[in-house]
Image (cartoon, rainbow, N blue to C red; front, side, top):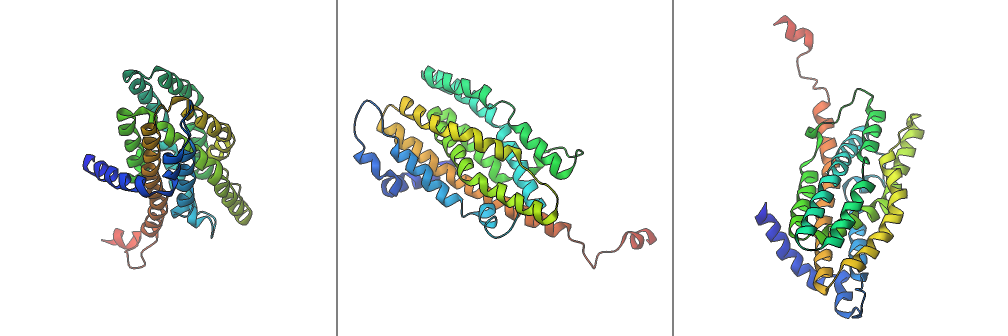
Length: 274
């Protein structure tokens, strides 16, 4: 809610004054091109935090369980599904605020990101069978909160969405291989192939995208305040992403506990006798 966001903004303002990734803002050279080093550092710091949380921490000790992988993919599907609405919102917000060049950039990204959710849908069907149909009931609270935060931020300040896009793409490039490696271990152990094209395809695509993202920042950032707002957005988005990776594991464990047979529960035959 708005109170929660306001509280986060106060906390983030405090972080911005003391955060190690912001040290370059005060010392960055003043020239024709803005220095994006502070943003690069904030993204690098975010990824260093995310890699040790929830699902990504589990990957270091064992392959993912099927329930964990299902929850992860089902929520990545939702995130990818929300990319188009977020970009469309960013186009409108940028144009309304007189940033037509930024609006055109987001408009071009719409076609570039078209249909990526279908990779995830195919991965889920390979994992769970052709009968599988994705449902919004699988979407975790943390996933909805992440995407709602992006939409509210876009309406207020469309430029900051570029910070989230960069974080998401660089995170995929750097942390995605660990997911792929885990699935290869599971495939070897169970002699059943499990693949995630939505991750492997994005690893390749996003390598190029990340470089473009930083070039676009240098193009669209007009002031030191712009830099600070993007860094602030990266820091806040990181907390939502950490919550997502944590909830994926917690949700899968809860689901597994609920599905375990209760030895004290009456059998179907016993129920029929009554």
